[in-house]
Length: 163
Image (tube, rainbow, N blue to C red; front, side, top):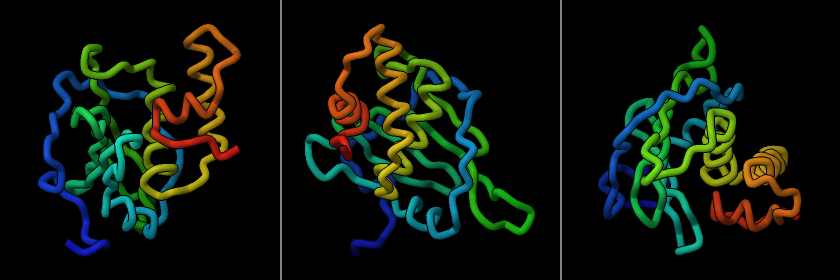
């Protein structure tokens, strides 16, 4: 496989589908460009044990699995963003609802995580505003204000803080 060849389901040793899908009602507003979609379709494989996500596309569906366990967390369906067919947006998504397999913190968190995995991990964008929001939502859920953003980012995404 060349460096630019798309990753497929068969590219990964173990993948477990979402066992209890729950629709996500809040979706990112972002429109990804055709160039972004081309890159998204190539997928992403965690390169080391610190990275948390494996991502691949089948048709118009993006699958996001945790790298260590192979468990599916998100399945995101893309559709053309305009009548002219330029750009893509998320049309629908499901998240793993089985709390033993994944811990969802609600639609706002899931919406943010889907966009962050695509933007920061697959596309390699800085995604500073999304990272800040992740730290805020995580601190709010924990009832704390002193959670270091770098620890939050690394725990959820496998990324280190951009600060």
